[in-house]
Picture (spheres, rainbow over the protein chains, first blue to last red):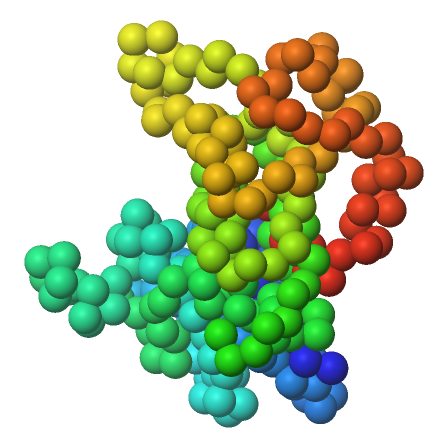
Length: 130
Length: 126
């Protein structure tokens, strides 16, 4: 089965963020395909490189980065949702005249069209939200 | 797009228009999605029915100081997004009738809403 994943909630704040990761990981380990993981609403914070959780807790951001690297996942952060929440990649930081960027490894920033395309191309769209 | 797949997309709106950003960002998906020429429907359930309430007043003078985006629902027609469904029970529980809404909708009972969802290829719930 080819899945599209939509993550609508932020890390540590909401179970949806963990559930999305666990579902994606389990699907991949069971031989399914993930067409794309799309991060929207506060879900964009799952891609912040500056996240520093307590040492005895899971690191949700690097967990995604590692999974993405292992399975060559396409992990897309919505640009509009990211910008209004202060999440920028290098290009966007430059374009907006900001002095820093904070997108973690393995994520890329793009538009909402990528979510619609994921819905079209995937056999199932899984929404993880509130 | 590389191919002409047309899928049935349903956007399920369950949250009040203000208080959280879900409604506004959901609407942004609908507007972008319209460019993909898919078969789009919108459902308004629970507090989501408030999104369509007429006469929203949100300015600093008269409200919470947030942009009123409700007129965008009236523009949806221009994007060929014309299938809007409102859950009857949610609407009536909130003391609203069709006359209180700023766009033409079809009012569905729970069984009709369930059938609508059953027919979809993609359900995006916000």
